[in-house]
Length: 105
Image 1: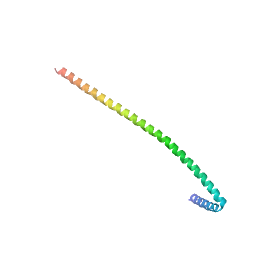
Image 2: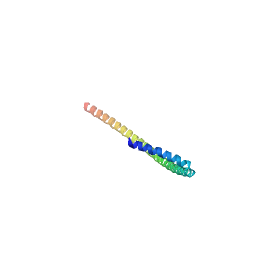
Image 3: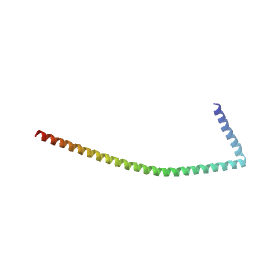
Image 4: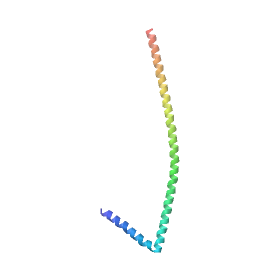
């Protein structure tokens, strides 16, 4: 709790000092320059963020398309395997029926 109190005193003291500095023309100019530098920095960070976001967006889109293609290929392969297994099972049943008929005849 004591740390929170000191933090609040520091923040309030900072606002008071900034207000007093802002009243002086030189202080006002200093704060305006500081604000301009901070704005320039945040603009650069924002531009870099948007650039990286665009790069990652393209990469994610490519990966998503590749994953979709891979899923479709696996789905087709599984469908073909099921069809082959069904055909093999059907052939085995037919062969068993034929063998059973030969034994009974």
